[in-house]
Length: 126
Image (tube, rainbow, N blue to C red; front, side, top):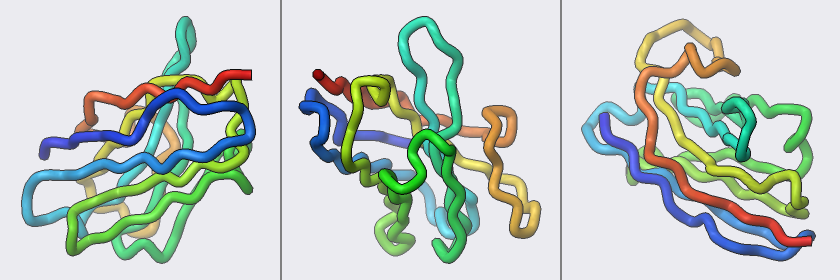
């Protein structure tokens, strides 16, 4: 599986961005998908995850209420809408695939995921 993330950029605090991640292959709808981010000098951290159908989601406390993860299975595309952005949201954002079937489990750890995109940089200015 190859993942291509896009949509990052420079935005002022309070602004919004929508990140996209396009996956290769024909089995996109069989994967749980996630977004993570990594700020300079920090470990990669969980942002959000979504079930195969899109009917179930999970968010980190830091983005809950400001972020929305969604997917369009026919387009092999994952999205992350981020609103009311803060300077502390500045990071490289990565999309990831969990290829293992584990029922309704939505992973929140980097070790839950098997494939990663190259990342897209989001910079929020104050």
